[in-house]
Length: 313
Image 1 (cartoon, rainbow, N blue to C red):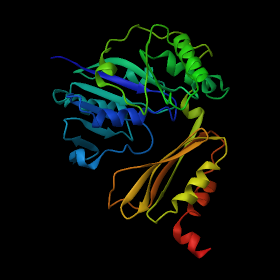
Image 2: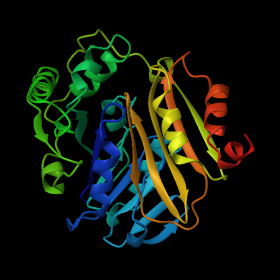
Image 3: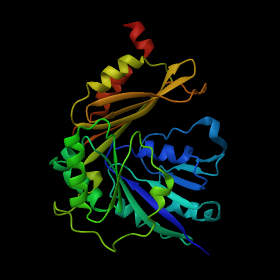
């Protein structure tokens, strides 16, 4: 039986992994791809593409499928391995604070084989992230695992930033392929053309090792079924302290409309999603440095954005 390659997509928080994966799911590439999302927050899938839902697995009209993994990733891979005859490629979107090499090593189920590790890097910020005393070792370790580096947001980065990002990727992952993309649009053939790892082991990280993500970060989830003042929420998210490294969520704006809320670094964006009349309220995930994330304070700040709260005040 031919084994199905498992491509792992890693990279630091806000680099553009989910945008890339969404593009793969919606793409007209003729490949049957199974996707496991091991990151916080929901992945947005065009409802017009969905033909069925089976528990947490969404099947699309183009033969692709997506599963959001909240628990044991190895068990989810085993489940996908049981359906390996349905797919030509399996993709794992790793958490932004994960070591993609460790995630890739989980592809041991019969019928699966470890494929390439793709690391997505924000060309505008990756150099600063790699130098950061708090997360620099993690960012460099992620890059060091790459067989393919995808530089994103090059339209937002200056020429010097792009040049620095290329140099950093080359230094951390010598021999890795590198491509540059806009809005996360990657050709599936280019992404999957290298399915055999180029080296058996990983080079030593220049920082001397990787700390466990659990010792670096904490997360907090805020949910509500009540309507939210989206502009008030934008202001709150923009004003969160520097200890907050990532915000990601889905927020209903009324009349069945919804947006994807993102904050990566100091940049806040609200991106329109497909209408869904059943979407109410919001679900927001916040990741912050350990000891710098106050859940009660976040709940109070987000709760003040509820339209009812603002009317009462």
